[in-house]
Image 1 (cartoon, rainbow, N blue to C red):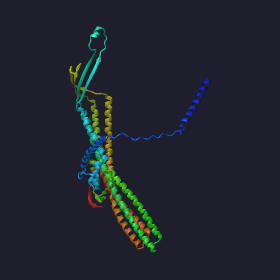
Image 2 (image 1 turned 45 degrees about the vertical axis):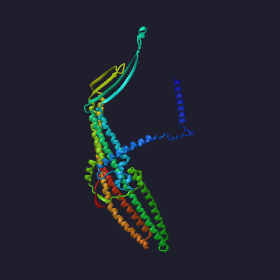
Image 3 (image 1 turned 60 degrees about the vertical axis):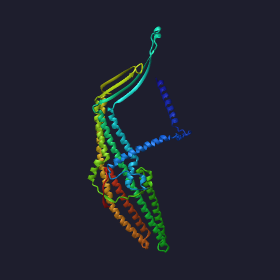
Image 4 (image 1 turned 90 degrees about the horizontal axis):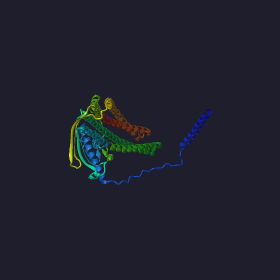
Length: 502
């Protein structure tokens, strides 16, 4: 027994040692082989010009149909704006309304949302198709060779040892009544379609918001570029003054060096402002969905009129117009219809059927037909149907909770957008006053430097203060316009502006 145990231990040690050696060999990296680089070869498939032309025509037609649908959905909420417009009619100059019109009919996101809505619309007809007859037609031919179990003279007497049959058949089935299952499914499909329409509206309003933000940012970028250009001119004028006064001995060389340094910084900021302007133009073209829009001239300016808003009224409008909230409500209705549909799965189907066959040994040998009515339970699994009802009920509870969550989100978003608009409104007055003071200080500092009373540091501080005051004011004005656009997006309707200037 002891020898047997020792033998087992020795075998175990040998097995462990061999596994360790094998593991080391596996973990050892292979450095002698290089990874093979695979290059994807270009597709040299010949282009079918006729097929590509047909695809392009189909795409253009679908885009035109979707554009008309988007126009109709948009103009129900914004009837004062006619969305019929073409880019070729603008002559390189666009207003904000022009950009919105173009985005409505050209942006791919809107086209996608409209097409998605059409998908749900077709499912309504698919649900009602249960009441349409299903027709089947076919023809069969068979040749049956008979097994001969007798021989001799009897088998030789038979002229034909096989049978041929021609059987053309036409049959139809029609659902007469299914105790409301089809209607419930059609109602469910309709609610889902209505929900998708609100989703499309939400996509339209999101695109409009992005267009407005991009348009306002491009206006701000143009203003910022003009501000930096004026700053460069001011520092160039200061440099001329510093050189002139240095030449007559009134100023030290350090004033000239400081003026050159200030002008260099101003030019760097101007270069950055030009790049920002170019990027903002590209973002506007992307928001509209037309790349050619990048080089246009903007007709509008940042709005300086005060918006007339009240939080309670805004919240009331949001609850009746916000597409996301209305879509969530339709999903609740659809889930309720789904519960009704699941419960009616326990009921049978009442249908009619009929078939006609004509054939036999010859095509016109004989005929036959069949007519009838049947009450049918198809795949009656009580356990499965019960769990499907439970699933439908749980789904309904989920969508009810989602609707409540969306309602709370609407309240929060409206409140947040309203506060942001009021904050930017109040900040405008302060920044406007600061701009006036900074401008006066900059003018006084320049006049003092002209007559030799001020120094370069005083002028630089005044110039930078004036620069920052301008950027702060226009930045607050930009925020005011963007916050107004955000408020329109979250309530799902336009807000009114007054004749009061800010």
